[in-house]
Image (cartoon, rainbow, N blue to C red):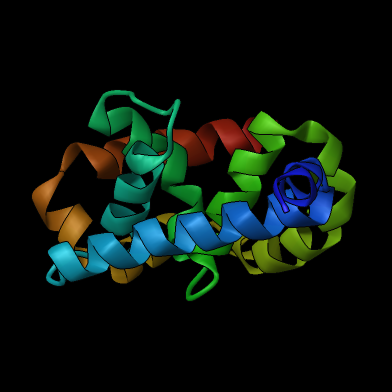
Length: 146
């Protein structure tokens, strides 16, 4: 049994499923702890809960801003981000799914509506962490230049 568990650890599909599951659990724990908050705050909390991602909270907010407008699949997109950083060899397995989940976000960026959409989707973060509005606006300017 121990050997099979070890072998499963190296299986790409198992790594992806485990990362998605763990990220969703962290996100749900953040929701339970702080139900008054919003998707962006819960994603930042899940980011900070990931081993090896101990950064200043504002960095976690900055790195999860783009994902916070995805909707119910936001924790999955965050998990794909973790996978792309930790095990790049798995990207080919989930890249098309991730692109499809992010497609609406790319569209609202191209339409110049990201900041408004972000504020509507994340009212708690917009109200309680005012510097995020400026950070998101700058992030979108940088994204548009690329």
